[in-house]
Length: 354
Image (cartoon, rainbow, N blue to C red; front, side, top):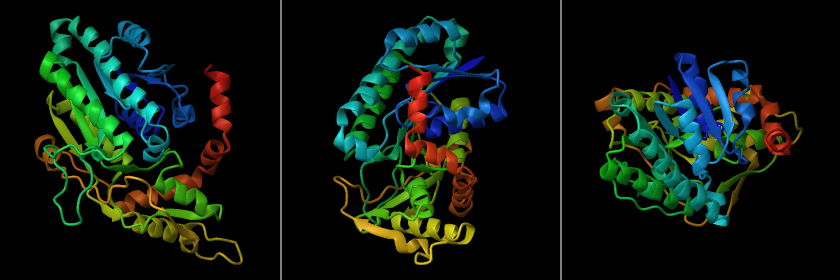
């Protein structure tokens, strides 16, 4: 049997594929456009694995998707494909509309056509898992209750608005066509292979290179932090036991301010990789507060009781164990970060994936 993962060369998708093949003998097709955040090197450990296959492509390309489905006959699609960086959505929202809304629509249409023609038993077993974000719910006040699956959608950036739109499309396909789709809304992920524009890998990379550590506004924005391997285990559980038409919130149960995150990472680095600079002895001294970004949500928090009660899932990692593993991974893989930040991997993609 086969599963199809879209966007599998990105941060969460790559971790999902790696974790999947550690625990399953089922073939994985990775379909990825290889934009700036899609890095084939994330999956270099699978180069000689006969169960892993990469295909370069775009979810907006209906003909390619339909041919892919016809040829490989997957029993499930896990859709990670998305533009996901809020800052980029503010400066160039059109790419987010194209991938997150039009791309999701065309993927749904192609998959619905494929599913509709399956034999009855395969049709009943088929699943479409749509990976989304807690940002669709908007911003919470300091003492407000955490987001549940019934929280009102109030997206505040082009990114979150585009993801909210895709969530609504997925919901409509279940209710209109009985298409067996499930949506997951996760909190902030962190861990290996995350592109260094995101907070934690950016702070690690800038610290060890003695560059400024930029923090938006006062740094007191709160996020619920979810270690990426925990997220992957939740998705596997949803694929196995989740009910079509349902939404499952996935959280790490770790609310932290951005400033807390930065101090924690700096403190770990001070111990694990002390600065050799005669002036900068404490990485915390590199912290630099910058103007807050437009539409910056103040707080996100996830109530994950539904997935815990109904599917018996909850995260294994505490923030302390997860962040320790994350910092150590980046210290052990500095060449991976350097390749990305220097543009080397983009040149390699252009050469090998024309």
